[in-house]
Length: 237
Image (cartoon, rainbow, N blue to C red):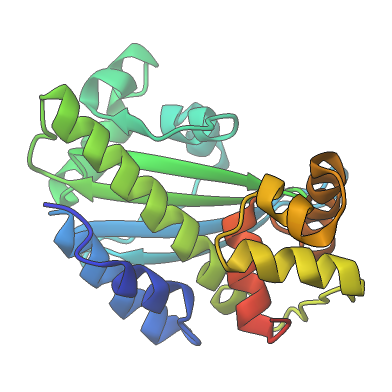
């Protein structure tokens, strides 16, 4: 199966509270045949205590005890720190890391195999989406590639809402964009490429890309898609 529609993804990114976020994540996870879903926002500023905010859709009888030693040994936790593409975890991964005991603790609650997507953003923030189930993942290259693509899309849209609902007390400061940056962002929202934007605004393509980089920095995002979503969310465009 695959994500049912772009509307479901947009609905997820627009979730305004934790209940909406969980409901919409559960729906998308179900579309991908996953019964368990985790969204975790990590802020790891050097020299400060790591802040971890998480939201889970899992069995109600699963109540893991967070142990610092276990976290350090968990191969999924270690890999997601630097991963830039989706990856699969299973019993073999835990066995190879000498952490089979951690696997045995979680397997009875439906954690048999899954896909993890980690997004690394400015401000020492990291967003992690985990999709888990007890059925085997597809074996074919085409099916697996499709699953990875859907999981990545899922994570990108979940991150937009996750930063909002997992840190509700945190004020989001959206720096004022210059008139030219707003023009560039509006054209990007309309689907215009950097080259087309340069022609429309009579500036160089390099200047357009420089404007985009400054926009990403001011909005605290890492991509054009995230910038457009945040601009619509905050009423900038």
